[in-house]
Image (cartoon, rainbow, N blue to C red; front, side, top):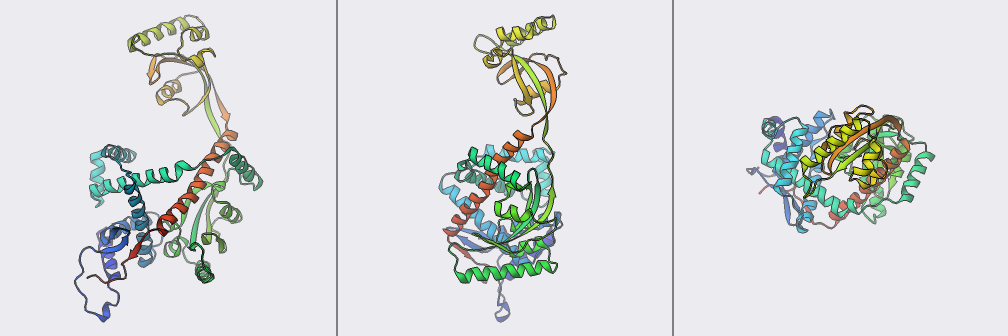
Length: 435
C-alpha cells in the first residue's frame, strides 16, 4: 500500500497546486484543510486514508479504477456528509461509550475468527492504525444510532401498505424475484430551473453515449454519479425486486442481465440503471418441531437445585408411564402452555431463546430432555413430532414488511441527508494553493 499512499499524496498535493506552472512551487505542508463543513474541517490526511480504503475495496472487487479527480471528488463528498451527521449527533448529545465500542470491535474480531490481539496484529500488518480504526468504528456506531433515532425508528408500515405491496408483487409477476443492479444519478437541486434541468439532461445523455461505446458502468458511476452508492460503482446488492422503488422496479423488470436502461427522470434528477443479476426465489420451506414442556421457576423459596430435582422427579414419573400432559397441567409454571397440556405448538428456529432451542434441536421424536436452565427458569421439554412446513405465505408477508420499511428508509434517509447538506455551510479548498 505504500505505493498507493505515496501516489495519493502526490495527487492530492497536485490538486492544491493548480496554476503552479505560472508561479514558483512552494514547499507543501504534510497536511492541509481540503474542506470546511460548518465549524468543522476535513484534512488532506483524512481524505487520503479514506481513498486508500476505497482503492483497496475497488481492487478487491476487480473494478476498473476511475480517474483520480473523480475519485477524490466522490470521497470528499462522502466525508462531508459524514461530518454533517457527526456534528448533528454531537449537538444532540449522542455518544458511544468505550464498553459499547469494545464489544463491537470484539464482535468484528470474532467474525474474522480472531481474538482481539490477533485482530490488532492483522490491522498493523495491513498498515492500519488500531486507534484510528477504533475511532472509525465509534463514528459508524454514532451515525447508525443517529439515523435510527432521526429516521428509521419513525418509519411505520400499515396493514394496507402490506396488502398493496403483495398485490403489486402479484400483479407485475415479480413475486420472489431477486435483482442486483447498478445506478447512476445526475442530481437536480430542489426547484431546479429550466437551465439546470437541461444541463443535467445533457450530462446524462453524455454518460449514456459513453456506456453505449463500451465504458465500464462502475467506473463511470464513480466518475459521474451523484448517487449515494457512486463510490461503490453505483452497485446495489441482490434484493427482492419489490424492495426497489417502483419507478426503478418497472424499468429493471424490462431489462435483461447486463442490459442498461435509457436515461429517465424522477424528482431527484436523471437516472440510468443496469441490471447485473436476476434470480428466482423458490418456496420457503422451514423445519419445525411440535413441543411441550414443563417449567419450574426459581424464587426466594425455590433455588436452582430444588427446581432441577423436582423436574428430575417429574421426568422419572413420565418415563415410568405417567402422562406428560397431566403432569404439565398440575406442575408447570408456564400458565399459558400448562392449560394446553404443556404444548407450545409448532416452533421454528429462532422462535425460542438459544438455550431452549439448543436442547430441543438435539432430541429425537418423543424424547424428553434432562432438566436444563434458561433465563425463564428450569425446563424439561419433549419433541412430539417434526415437519417440513411451507411457510411461503407468511414469509412473503414478513418480507413485505421488511422490504417496505427498507424502501421507506432509503427514501427518507436520502431526503434527510439532502436536507442536512442543503442547510450546511460547505467550502471546498481542493482548488486552492497551499500556503
